Image (cartoon, rainbow, N blue to C red; front, side, top):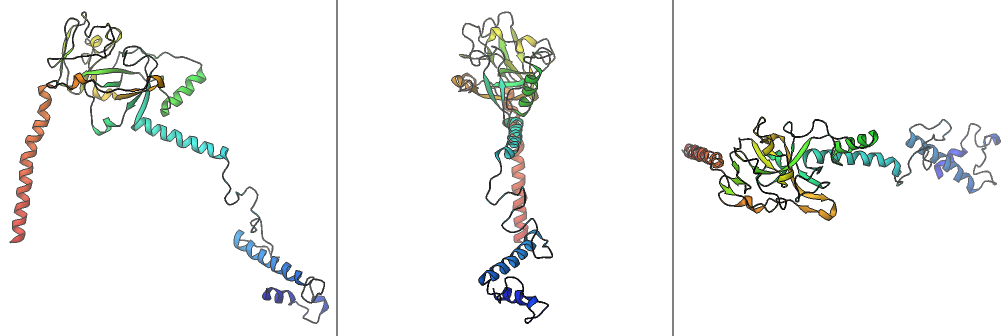
Length: 335
């Protein structure tokens, strides 16, 4: 306070010059302590204006950034951003996360037909695991898998429903994974045989895999496990799978494409992933485990044991060689 008062009394006219007295000086009996308050307030405002906005005026007054007076449109400290300004950011983040989840983790698919009844009904929504194949795990017997059309299994053009705006919205939501896509030509069937397996159907069944009969309680009631008009014995090539629908009388599966390239089998690279849960409608929520018949002993083909055996045979001498090298290095170091 003392410095400001002194500064206010100093003028070009000197202390004896009446004209040098400014309104509100200490010598003015009408001002009293008010002079000090006004003088100190002006100086503080000028200093604050210079420090805050970076440009104080020549008369000591600050610019638009004066302390205590936020500029036009500035957000006050502690004031939350408007919901409508944050909404586009939140929507953008949600879409990015949905796209990442659909691409690398889980994707929803709609069941368009009754070929997997009664396990899956038309209109069900299933969630498909897309993460496991990234680690090199292939489809296993008994799994319900979604796969891309190997060629000729589905009509050339999918059925278009709804107006153009509705189809456009469905494409966008399907692309990010928020709803099933209407354009993707995918199918869902149960894996019966994998590479190296021999799958057979004689008469009305049962289906045999590597000579072992399958007990298939999931097959649609009243439908035979095998079609008497579609008898076959198939050796599944490596890197491919043999698939059949659970409703054998209403499923255009591997049996109906044996005269096409691949002999009715599906390339493993076409498999999108395994359907592991029925997510919608909620009344039908259920997991999709592998049926117990596919866990029976001796079901695996004898040839499937060759790769592990070959790997073990190669690992043993390699391990012995590494140990011998380490032992030799220790001997040299001690010498």
